[in-house]
Image 1 (cartoon, helix red, strand yellow):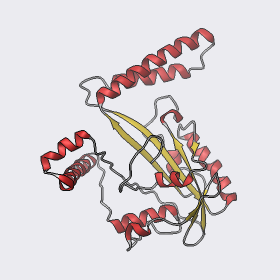
Image 2 (cartoon, rainbow, N blue to C red):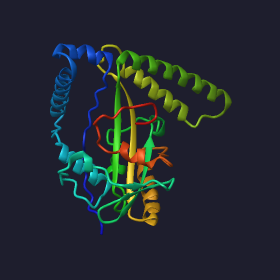
Image 3 (cartoon, rainbow, N blue to C red):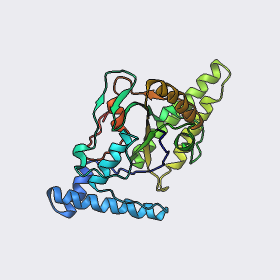
Image 4 (cartoon, one colour):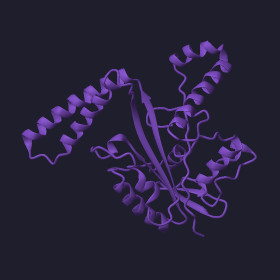
Length: 274
């Protein structure tokens, strides 16, 4: 059976427990209760800022979240069907024996699933339009169930300015070196222009902080043959979305799939992995 395409958006807010967080939490008391009160305040701030931009947020209960996570693994499942047992039944069994895909054992059939990552260096160096991901979100030819996750880790402005200054100096040096060796194809100039723009954006007093951006896309098909076709369709859509390189999670697609799910319960970030 064909899967009707639906477009939904979920927001996961992560709050690292840092020394700055611990210091702020002292204003609310001690222990877990203080952390909880501070987290509630932060979430209310996020909600207010979203509303100011015309975005309405609705919190999910544990049973609703479990239903969403299950449906994102098994496209035959409805997205709005809560799981009464909650997170204990949110994850489906899978077979990770193949290096280039994961087989998720769905309610009706197996789903052959692949995940790819996009780092900042996997994007075109040119200035991107606000809707640069539209082709891969809404314009994939054919019916390819997919989940796209973008992660934005905020970087304090002073640290972001230092990084931008270093990148700008590196790009200027690279552009001079390339000019001395060969006729430029324009890529070095584009990269340097991007570094300069970041310097301008992060000017003291602008109120702008830095951000580390990354993306993952997980997609599924009901057979190896359909998965091969989906690889080509997703590749064409990402090309149109200014994505220059996909890094597949081969031999670790179970981690890749989990990365694409809106899980925010007890997940700890480590370098290069969850």
